Length: 99
Image 1: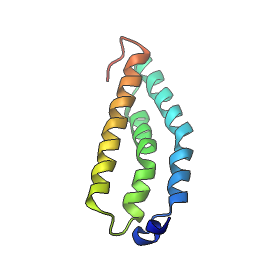
Image 2 (image 1 turned 90 degrees about the horizontal axis):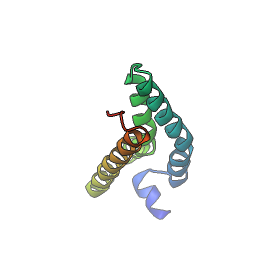
Image 3 (image 1 turned 120 degrees about the vertical axis):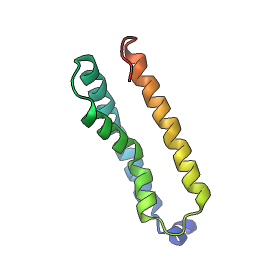
Image 4 (image 1 turned 30 degrees about the vertical axis):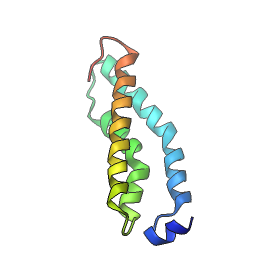
C-alpha cells in the first residue's frame, strides 16, 4: 500500500477495474465468437475484447508516475499471455473458427 503513493496508482481502483472488467470481457468474447460464426464484421468485438483485457493496465500506464521499466515489461508479458489465451479460447469453441 505504501508503494501506491510513490507511483500515483491506487490499488483499490486498479483492483476494481480489473475485477469489474471480467463480465464485460466475457461478453465481448461471446460477441466475437457469435459474429465469427455468423460471418459478421469482427472489428468492434475485437476492439471491445482488447479494451476490457487491457483496461486495468491502461489505468496503471495513464495514472502511474515513475513506474519502473520492469513493470511495463511485466504488463506487456501479461497482455501477450492474455491475448494468446483468449485466442486459444475463441478458436477452441469451434474447430472451424480461426482468427
